[in-house]
Length: 495
Image 1 (tube, rainbow, N blue to C red):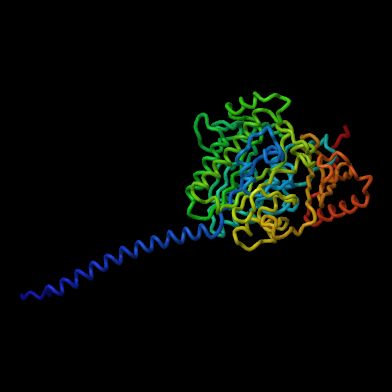
Image 2: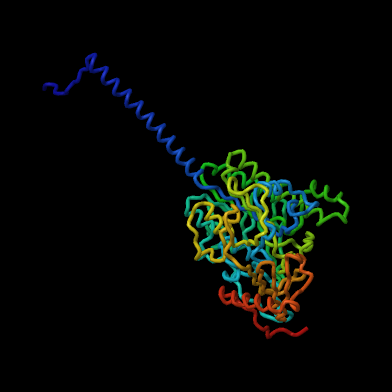
């Protein structure tokens, strides 16, 4: 049978054409691959540079005067002071509540705690059915999943999101950071303080009213000798490095400087040498403040090393005032847990390179709810007034190109706790005037913070018209936000 296979023979000319075609195809393939790779890299870099990164650093229980840039000559905070030098420092910055969980909820949602019905730290366990005259206002034990958090909003806009440190806004099964818009959760748990600041960070807590013991598991891996503040800083650095080529939102929420008061030994020993009368707080607490400051320095140096510092908005603040047994809040009155200034006025520092003039100082009152709309505006997103209904966009203040459309700030704390000078109360600050309503007695007190930052001179008898005006506004606001009231406690024994 004849061979019918077709053979093709290449002569010299046809061979050259074939080789040239093959070589050209290979070159184009390689070039296309390189161009595609470059295009991807360029697109990634362009995307990363088109919107700023966001770093929000939240300290726990850090008092208004616990930083050098706020007047302390005892605590050593050169890195946070430098942050203030590079941005704007607010002298009238406020936490949304005098205790932690409500303030954290306000930051995440842009809403007042009263509107969220989350007005107490979780879980409280301080109310007594026989010793307290009023029943506490009701409050939720988890941040509702129905809220669109700032992390969820940023993730929708293409940001990589990470939460590190103290969460204290819900239980593990449904309400941890990973359920509220964060891609990564490092050490975020339901408890408000670690068992220890030294590895393995475990311990226990006796719940006052239940008589039960809460055992605190380790929040993150480590090794013998590790200090929790340092470990969180390490994780923050790693996250920044891993996500340097894309927009990211990092919320570094330190457990420090909350109790237990445990500073690193080398730092504590240095503050031990300070004459006791010259101390603003115990040496262990001072050491903890210094460690938080060092963590801020590590984050800022990492941003600088990766050439991201000029393209990152940084916010630093605290969740409430300083703890009475840890620091002296003077000239402010009282401390954490109280609605006097020592319990609610906190440091607020914002660095926004190219937009905020270095060494700026603002005396405008701002509050935790304001961070949400501000971050949206800075990242070029549309505001969500239905979500951050109580927050105000601070960009006009940061850039010096406008003002805030807000006439007052409000607080609602229908609860008991064991902090000094604390009592169930409502507060309004309008301009320089501050009115406090004590819920048990109905007593109203009035202060002018411009002339009396220490709230030592009650002007309610001298300014009855101002009292009536502010009290009417406060009551109207409570109705507007649906604030849950206190009611008579029928179990109260009168003792």
